[in-house]
Length: 172
Image (tube, rainbow, N blue to C red; front, side, top):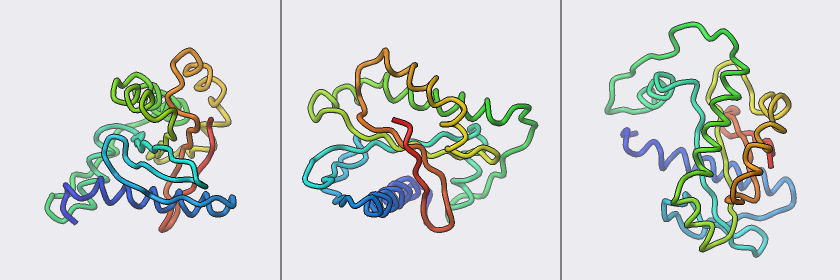
């Protein structure tokens, strides 16, 4: 796969996994379009909404390592060197920053004004902390941070890779 094709393929994979996740809750998701932004306009049980997908990487080197490993047209650039003293706190900080950045983006505010609040899916790509741990340890703190902002998203899920799919954990 070419480097430029990784993000769209990743987004489709996340959307398909989210569709399976919702089906287990008795809901149906149909992708209507992929305008970018947002990453998808969807129908969930007869209600049209939008989905934005973002990823929280341990650091930029980790992100580069993952994407260059998957690309056929790029040389792999290994990452993950160095010591992380408090991996849980580092992950919480990264996830919080990614979520708040989405709330602060003018494009997200514009989409919300046109379509109403959407769904945010945040992938956690850190080697030692899982989304459920972030929610358990800092979910209330993150929710408090976003409570003072305009309601851009109705629902926020954190997710992680799991074999050939993704596991989703509801934050909001």
